[in-house]
Image 1 (cartoon, rainbow, N blue to C red):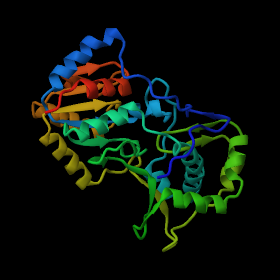
Image 2 (tube, rainbow, N blue to C red):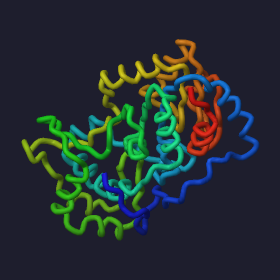
Image 3 (tube, rainbow, N blue to C red):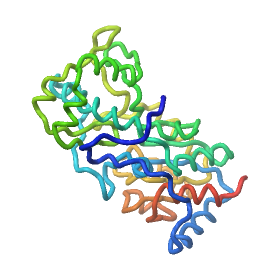
Length: 308
């Protein structure tokens, strides 16, 4: 996916500007706990599980972090059950996509890619749909919840790129993005959804149908109330099974889709290290819990962990 110039539009909240990557050095008070994690993980191949907290340093807002925008994401049942809900969702997604696609990987994404290049990972499981791990160079990635840069037809199951659909939606709704920005504050979410306080603008939005069959298009990621495909879950379990330890970075583990892998690793007696600002549902299973910044901690570990 071609990257655009960094930056965001005027009048947006919940979508930070993109600062340059910070040095990987950590405050001195965090070094003893980080050194404990390094000693625990050294000499082991790792499975890595990441969540939205890793992408906040790329300007992508979090669902549940301290700076998260309170919101109720649309469920799968709401999306498929009402054309008005689909209209509202695609209008908001068109705005969110136009801004989220500018995000670049941060030093945490690059650190995970470096660990993989050095042969220190069995693989990467990410709950994020932003594809920033792939942009950073990670290859063996399970996009547990799908990907925001692709759409799927619920009728014929054909897939299309989100950038292609963006062009179609722009043609169907000329001037919509400019009007949305001028209409008031727009809040962006990590799945490219957005909250727009202009009911008239949303109600006039024209939704695109599948160009092949005229069916219903949906972003190709897992909605709340929708199940992660079984083959994807099985592949993620296999990554954990092959690993000597599980490293969790930037996930509150609130939903079972990620928590199950922490429980699985702990049940197998594998060390679990969790890096997250704030408590997580996986903390009772953690060998070490680090309340530190996610991206800089991953960068520090990538510098300090020895090759096998």
